[in-house]
Image (cartoon, rainbow, N blue to C red; front, side, top):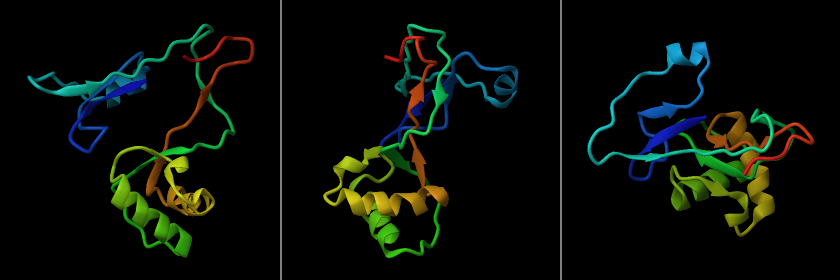
Length: 133
């Protein structure tokens, strides 16, 4: 689980806090010091089971725009990215926020494939193992 520094219009700043890292993550993750007036979002997950989250084939509906650029082919995808840039910039959004949700669903696929959007995946726990809160 990774918690990030917050900045204006940005939910994932340069600094981050990693909880329960593996050995590889410890080597990759840069150490940092907290400074006065910095703001962090602390991610908290609570489980009644083993606490091992897994991604499943659930369709994600919450996304965040990345800094990547790509010339999209489909008209629906270009219109979708234009709306995302105007209304949400780099903040997370849900597909339900769009007036025409069907067109948004059409446009999101190409955007995710070309890394213009980061999906917020839903985590599941083993059946009978409790759940995430």
